[in-house]
Image (cartoon, rainbow, N blue to C red; front, side, top):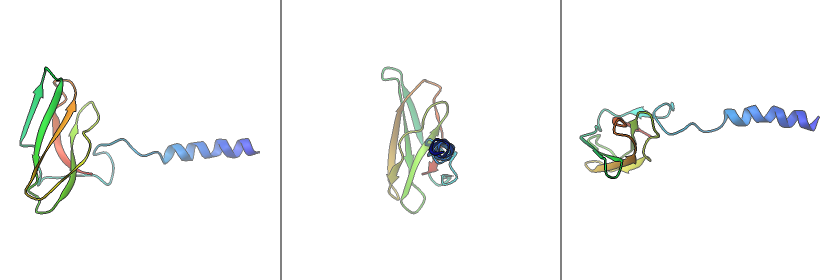
Length: 101
């Protein structure tokens, strides 16, 4: 009987596993007040860099959404300041938009 209880708990634990980073989470929202102003791929380092200025009128906690790979770590961007996100990836791993974390 104890074994049945253990097996019964496994699916529930799997259902509570946090989702991977990215805008698929219901808590994350696309930010139209903070847009990607520049992006650059460095083939020597095989990495991308994107600059995001915060024009939202408040501090934000955000990242950029990238196709085919994980998104860069979220960062605090103070009102009126910019942040450079960077990540490794293929030349086609361009950032699409900024989202709140």
